[in-house]
Length: 211
Image (cartoon, rainbow, N blue to C red):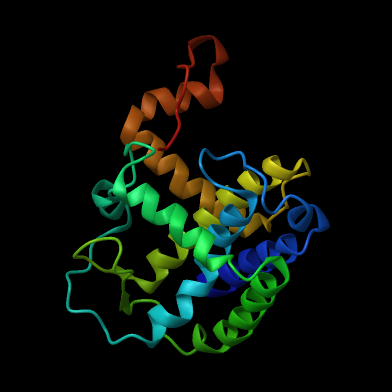
């Protein structure tokens, strides 16, 4: 079930936040431009910490759209580094991490404990939203897919930033994340480009990046 896969992914990220190298490199620049390691860790943690507030909020009145339509509307895709949306994302990461690595990891651990109960009690069809997005909602199922992708990608960003191996996710979690990224890549570059990249190196395009 998607809730279980999300929780598994969140637990991997939570353990990774306690890696000693994260604390040692906390104030240093990360692999992402303009993000410190601490700010990147805060952004990673936000993918879990935002969920309790989202689930506690009233059912949104905004229209519910599909998963790929969501990525057609978000402002951060293709935005300049200094665009307002990216500045807000970086500032939010730094604010989330302001109390340091130990407090951040503890907050994520506590959130996961609560989410294990609340996710089990919430229908996956329930509309939910993050106000930062814009005037639309997603089903809880689709929201969890987006957060799993964020957790997977930013765990890799953090691992590269501190020079350690990327945490391994469960097979089912990897399947969910790769399915989303592959669909986004096919929409952006066309299915033939993705097929060639995966099967014919001699005809592969330079990039099939999803974003």
